[in-house]
Length: 428
Image (tube, rainbow, N blue to C red; front, top):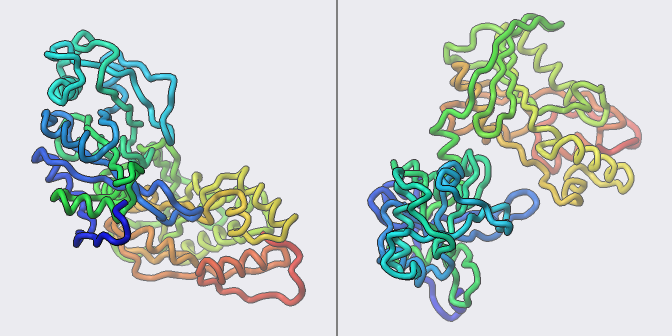
């Protein structure tokens, strides 16, 4: 990074995804920033960035600029089916965070050895040519492709996936050119340097986080698989079974009454809790909240419960949740401290796919059954409006009182907590 005695130029705010897509479609480069270094709760500490452009539009000037100005190696990101169709194989070496490097290539029509900016640009454009075949390349070469995971940034929040997603959004083949931006000391540049770099070279800059949000808002990512009547002790519901098109995870919506007229509707976004929902655990209030939500919806005559299986343990999974319980009981930690001791965030849940389920069912205005204000925030931007937050009263017991206090005091939950007398027996 520039020294502390060197004043930063005036830098822009991050651009919107629509703005950087327009730049890419016009053949210009952009800077894409990730949130690779984060704390255990997912808060960004520093962002790293790469120069990105559309592979089809690469020329010798752009390749030369990337190599000289960015400083990192120039790669081609592409979706795996495209690379496999060209007969490329993944190397034995796996890159950081699971990046899949393929064997290097040259275009057979290259004039020289393949190392010049002109020859590398030709190889890049040949990789992006939908009519190219395996016979159009020689191995090894001077251009290394990297395979993006299917699902893009919704599956893996990396520059590889982000650049391919942006290429598709710009109306081009799913291939992009990218190069890591290094600072003056040859280290990966942090966000302030990246913003200065973008301002210096007249480039727009966006974040992978915003790209993820853009895709979740603009694409339909759920598919209805089945619908069946489900009578319960609280009344007759209809169960809608959805599948996430991103990772195949199931989302179950229990619906009572007509909820498709767009009027305010009681909604519970319920995170799966095997221990509380199915096994009757007293260490939490999850099962009680599910029962209360069903009762309140039955009393109103209409409403929806979205049951999210992948949210077990606030997103850490059943095994890690039980490890956290062990730490709480043996070391006296609370839920947040136990998760952090395991190197896990306190809450890694995301409600974007669940929001799409609600939208697909016809809901637009929600009366959200929750004590957690983060759920309200998590539903913004999906064509939904939370018109009311309806709290669910907890019935504390000696085993979950500390758990409920932690949710109230450290996580901002609006709990209707009427504490019993007596010492805590367990933490949860």
